[in-house]
Amino acid sequence: MKRTFQILSVTICMVLSLAILLSSYSTASAAEQPRYGDNLNLIIRFPSNLFGYPPLIRGSGRDYTPPCFDRLFYVGDDGKYEPELALSWDVSKDGKAITFKLRQGVIFHDGTPFNAQAVKSNIDKLTQSKRPAITGITSVDVVDDYTVRLNLPEYNNLILFQFAINPATYMYSPEAFKKHGEDWANTHPVGTGPFMFKDYQPDISLTLVKNPNYWRKGLPYLDGIKISVVSDDMTQMMAIKAGQAHAIYDIGLVAADKLRDDGYPLQIAQTGTSMGINFDVKNSEIFSKRQVREAIGYAIDKEAICNGPGRGLYIPLYQIIPHTSPDYNKACPPRKYDPAKAKKLLAEAGYPNGFGFKLFLPDRAWKDGYVAIQSYLDQVGIKMEMNYLNSSAFNLIRGGKIEPGATSFNNFTTSSNTLYTLDTFWRSNSPRYSYIVKPTGIDQLIDQAKSSRDPAAIKEINQQCIKLIYDDATIVPLWLTPRMAVVDKSVRNTGWFINSDPDNNQLGTWTWLKK
Image 1 (tube, rainbow, N blue to C red):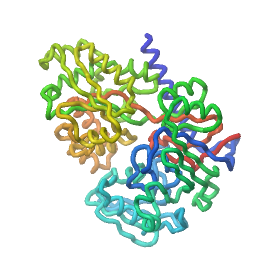
Image 2 (cartoon, rainbow, N blue to C red):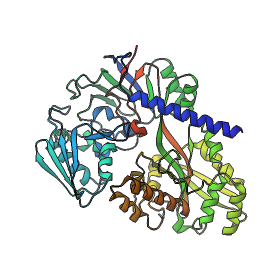
Image 3 (cartoon, rainbow, N blue to C red):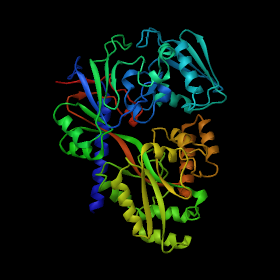
């Protein structure tokens, strides 16, 4: 009964949070007109020095510069594409060309014009980079000053979504890049967005000022935005309670829970980062046995962890996507906490007395959760040795270099588009955690889904892929850590989590402060 109540409470919390975040993006009502002036003081947990040049934006850098940039189009609250720098886009009948009609009269922050040549320059650099965020574009043609055409080898329904959601597709001034170079661009965003770069203090703050020539007439409302790096939960809470900050983005678990209890509005994305445990199956006799991988899943009480140390804010995972996703596969019964079944599977695999193994994870991982996992596994005879690594060392594992036969913390970003998640992280040639052996046939299914124009067929294939990963127990899903933000009651229209996607960030465009 207690657990049922806890789960119900979490569900209610998520529904209320979704209502809050949807209302935060809508335009002000007639009874509450937007107000000009003031500076928004925003706290972000993690520093970044890769936030200015779109093709190289990484990690927390994705959270710094949405106010400085525009995309060709973005995903609206209803999941449909909304025009931004592109007024329209047309896909040819054979699917091998996409033609964009561009907005006229837009200028970059350095005063240079936005036009078809600028779009071609941005896309060429994006597709030719060492780590292309978008693949499958063979060439870009300038049709006229405000018309550009992408040429594709074959139809790919993910191309438009990637342009609408990936920070790498923000439009950067080609002239600024040509003049100053990549290193300078990494910390100097020069876009067409509502705010412009003023000052950057590494690991301390980023200051932005209003763009007086913004193409959306009458916007933005704010005079400026200051983003400060504050990693400590207590310091974050003190700052917002003292009125020194208006909002905390990507807030930590403890601070989010306490400020929520104190009445501060909490915004939660329904997507976020999925956590799990992956295995070097190729070099481990133990983990090559599916029963062992399944046993680890059954041995962990994910709901107790999420409702206890997770404070009801983390979501237990039993597939690679959360149960809130429309692509969640109901044909895959959750491997819920069942230590007796875990022991039975271990015995079937030939390990009735358990075994020991190493887990590698980053030093900023959620330690309370993994300590709890360690305790649960110990109860079925599995000894998990945790090895915390700094970012540089763990990036080697994320890049595919792991101690033979070991396991690793696994994280990947979920999206409102499941096919995008599958194509990015679950192909056999994915560069992230490349030692993971992916289920046979998954690449072919993903390609089949990408070439389809039928939403129902795409959904069916997505679910087939999810079932392949589930049946194989490729990873043990643990929990979803959703992006969360706390705002004080003066903040209106943050623009965060549009269509519940953290990368669909319009901070500053319609944001204003109520006195």
